[in-house]
Length: 284
Image (cartoon, rainbow, N blue to C red; front, top):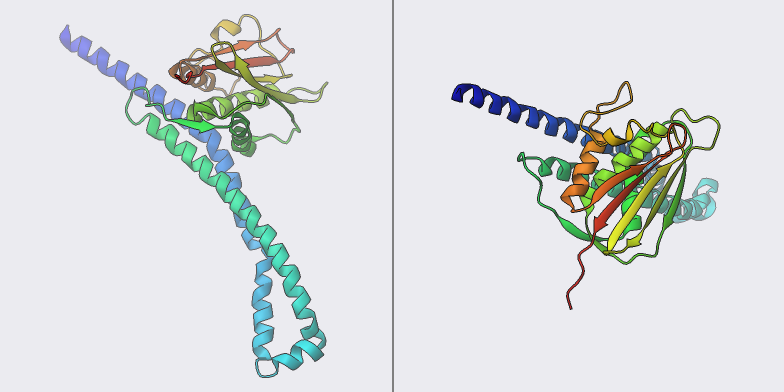
């Protein structure tokens, strides 16, 4: 009997490990799309950089190293060089700023992936890492991280963010939830043809105090019979779905002491996901 129990425990542990691994891969996959887009943008910007023009300028000046003054003041091509260099400096400065910003997004994506993986290195709940962050920036980061998997369909984004102070939040858990909810909303908007596809974000404080973030879409909606199971592990209504995303979101919300709920009037009426996160009240 003990051997049977041991085998059952081992299988249970293996099943739990498989669930964690699948969830981690799902969440990492969401962010990898964004990382890939950022890497491709930086690569294409470097290949097309106008800075290559400096090499041509240097070559021309080197060819006239012995008569540089005459070349710059009397030669038709030489007289164009100072103005060209000024314009080139402006263009390269803009290019550099764009690359720096894209590398910043790339770093954020990699940092988020590292945190997702580190959070599950043991088969237990991860230690919460709380940071003081602006909520609007979290939403913008989540949108950027979701950009790589956007379909060709144009989706309007509306943000109704209250004037919130900096809040102490588990940044990576909130990002994990938002990235999944954005992905879920985009998929729900895939078949919308009779209206402009739209995702609406709102954020504000409720009693508690509690931070409430809502993500709404005007997509396919959720049938009443599916609502009770929407956060269950493995439940999905999509042929290519795995049922891990919303389940991991609900767990992440619970790990922060909060909860994730959903409301939908039914098929064709869109859906609203509501994330409530209790906030620590500073002691006097």
